Amino acid sequence: MASIYRSEHPRPQFMRESWLNLNGEWEFAFDDANDGGEQGWHLGGQQLPLRIQVPFTFQSKLSGIADPTVHDTVWYRRSLDIPASFKGKRTILHFGAVDYEAQVWVNGILVASHQGGHTPFHADITDALKETDNVLVVKAVDYSRDVTLPRGKQYWLDESASIFYTRTTGIWQTVWMEAVAPVHIDHVRMTPDIDRNQIEVRTCLNGGAAGRGLKLKVAVTFEGAAVAEETYNVMDERETRLISLLDLYDRGGARWWSPESPRLYDIAFSLIDGDSAIDEATGYFGMRKVSIENGKLCLNNRPYFSKMVLDQGYFPDGNLTPPSDEAIRRDVELTKAMGFNGARKHQKLEDPRYLYWCDKLGLVVWSEAANAYQFTEEYVQKFTKEWMASIERDANHPCIIAWVPLNESWGVPNIQIDKQQQQHAMAMYYLTKSLDPTRPVVSNDGWEMVKTDLFNIHDYEWRREVLEERYGSADKAVEAMPANRRLAVDGYPYEGQPILVTEFGGISYKKSEWEGWGYSGADSDEDFEARLRAVIQPFHGKGCVVQGYCYTQLTDVEQEINGLLTYDRVPKLPLELIKAINEGK
Image 1 (cartoon, helix red, strand yellow):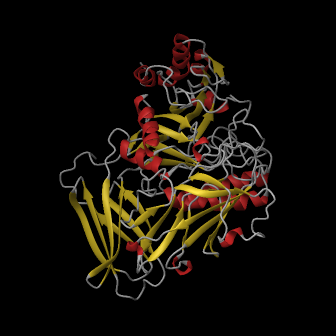
Image 2 (cartoon, helix red, strand yellow; image 1 turned 45 degrees about the horizontal axis):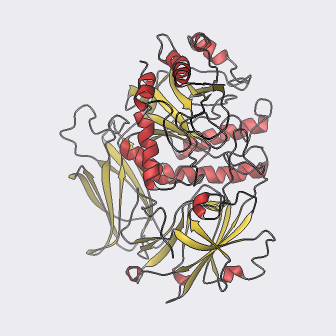
């Protein structure tokens, strides 16, 4: 196999030493006639005609194919060499994300089927393996024209236009394997409680753990110093412990996580059988709290003013897939350098490596689902399953402080008058709260909200005086109709929630060869600076009721040139100048 792209560990919050990255060159084929199965491609006995660089989809340049046309069925094939260190253990095959449906065969044996273009899945492939000459085959099926499919910004027409971009079909996040004991820790949920200085640790072990006399050891350190260690009997496959942290020298929350001070604890898990550890994994967590107190959005029990940027998570050569871990980190660093303390990841379940760098470098994230565009009962089933899996994957990240299942009535276009669509939005709100009661939930970001913890408004007004007037009082703000849409659905009045403007600006400014559009336009650096001040400074003004904002957007994307950075991440104004504007200077 050729050189491996994206070789870093894809799951930094729960890592084992024995793992293998499978990114790199794979065999590949389009199957427009959808007859690959009839030809026996899944059996793995015949080579496929093309070559592709995984995890980049065939639409992207980095894939080595760069074909933007519609091919809804594609196949992948590669040899599978099992490391000697895996011997005597179970081999788990992981896929970060495959858009939209996937079937996976090892040596002609079906080992996994998955639906959902943004969520991970895995399979124990041990029993399908041979001593040598193993072959892995993947069939991916997309539905490019289906507007009821959770797709985010992927356009269903042939060419990108308006606010929609190039499609993503097939494998677009890392493929990897790890070796585990026959009995091992499947996953962990960690919930911090800064008020009691405790971390709740819920471990889920795979089948067969109960009744075997196993023990679980949990060790917590902070900057190398031990702060907690507990060993307890495994009575069931699911165990929950409240672990108190020894922080005798911490005063005033110095060890709490925030963008300004992203302090992290390391945690190690050991599953013990007798005197031996049969499974070991390491991770991390942050001690932080998100709450709403007296109508104020708070971080660590203090009101927190959100200065966020809308981040689409697209790249010129990789599309939805970042080209490297360095590129992911650079996006976080650029965001912080411009004075933002958060990002709203827009219509995309972001790569876990992005969340890792936000945890490590300090950037809050609003996690938003990739929405469909139209409503059907089948859409509800698909979307609900994918959203639940998204929360399960990412709930341990301290950087995530809000869940956003729906945006701008995508998937629920008639929510203002359609009771069924209203009930869907309500269901997503309460479902999310049932899965994670520790974070606020936004029922429908932008307008036409039902029950919601935050009252979020999308407003692309560019005149300073209008913004100052509109957000000078809560009454005026919640009665406004910036997009000619009612902000709340009838029957769901404003109830004193924190008010945030979570899309605004969108000022187009051409600073590269890219052509495109924005919500208003600048024709020079001086004009762009003046326009930025006009839309940002009103939210810093005395008497403004807005508790945070999210500027549109971080970078230019394809036909959009309304970024603070060009598509290849070059700042359109000096970073320190944008930071000063964000600081109200």
